[in-house]
Image (cartoon, rainbow, N blue to C red; front, top):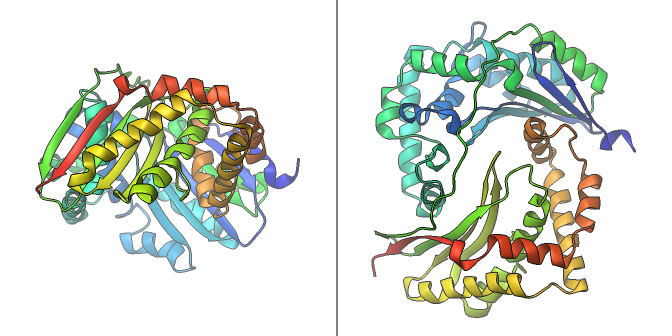
Length: 413
């Protein structure tokens, strides 16, 4: 196996897992992910993980906010961060000669942030604007509201951004308490893709990260217990009616995950020739946007079909989606159809990973759940073994109409 296909791993003495894959070229990509996100918040902490992500860049014991933001930007690099329902991540892309600078910055931001109180009030306003902006976009809002419906009564049903009242109330002590409780080194993964050897990356990881200690705080996420199938309609002052249909699917480490990814791609993936696009948008011209997604969490997952549609075409569009789901449940793919579907997914994954950053983020997240992280050739080999019968079985487990939840933001006609 060539050097560029080898994924190397190690664990620092303090518990941080490091992952590396060599890639030729001038660019390197670095990510530091914490296995803590919105799901780990108590009810009165909703939005706190996302708030911490913002505040981490506002000053450390060694750097002011300006110096943090300028450290990589001044040399043409790109620094960013995000919060999900289960993770918080800092990531950057930069020229390979700046790997020392990036590693030093990441360690400083993760372990030495001071969360200055004078910056907190300003950042609260930024996040409140983010919440309001999100509410102005029903095509975005409906996804979170659907998970609220699907995971009702569980942390996974909450919004990552939190609420206006809670975000407005947070203090520096709230941030420090949450970070101390959840940001222990043994809940972190540091990963790199770039033109650097694993030996060199390991030495830098030891230099910048190994000295940081933190108590390994035992914790257990509350498992999700499935709810009865639900549907809800809200009247909104929108031009389009927005619809999400979907239900539960497989968790991150489920052996059927790759089959579900392939099935979802056939149904309504990004390609123009997906079944939903061809048989609803192109054939009837009903939907401005129609797509399906599959999301996998640590112990559950879900699939969604989203439609942005004229209100007069809503009912017909929903029935056409059910028709496509039923086809996948009752009609096996032919040999050529299955072969083409596999080739399409392989090409999409290869193109997505070409940037390096997408490849890295998949790799760093896998570090929490997999002892052996698959390379692209290994994933392709598994994909090639999937049969039409496998897809039929998955479709019947997941797409059963009795298990489909429905959320509609109906426009005022």
